[in-house]
Image (cartoon, rainbow, N blue to C red; front, side):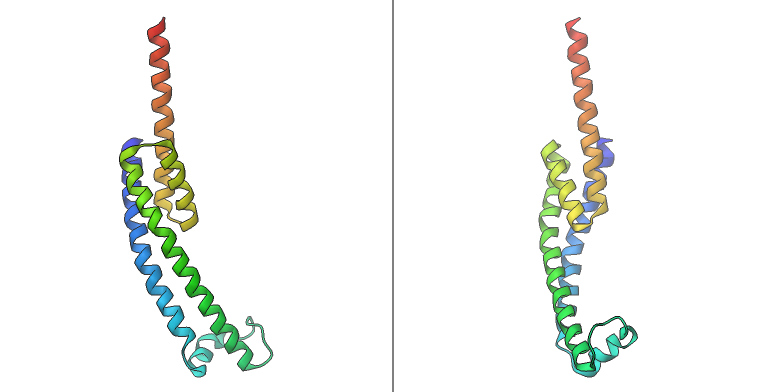
Length: 143
């Protein structure tokens, strides 16, 4: 269990680092797209005209601009949250602390890094089984 946890946390940490750069690149794309001309934005949103609120084309284009800016901000926040996810994933591989596994689990859920989530769960299970084995050894040594 411990080795599986370490491998998953390693893969999850690497994926968190990749998601930092991918998120920043995607945010740059969204911000650049929000500054595009009206014709370009209309070409992007034309298949979804019936789903976008607004009576006129100008209102739909303005809604798309605002939505693209918000998606860019969301990607920046997700990228910033991936930084502590990577750090915690790498530190919980070596320290094997229950608190670090719980923190890795929380940040893995927030950032959607499945390998960090699985690594933290396996680490918590491995810690619990080690603790149970230690308690059983103490009980056996007393009798």
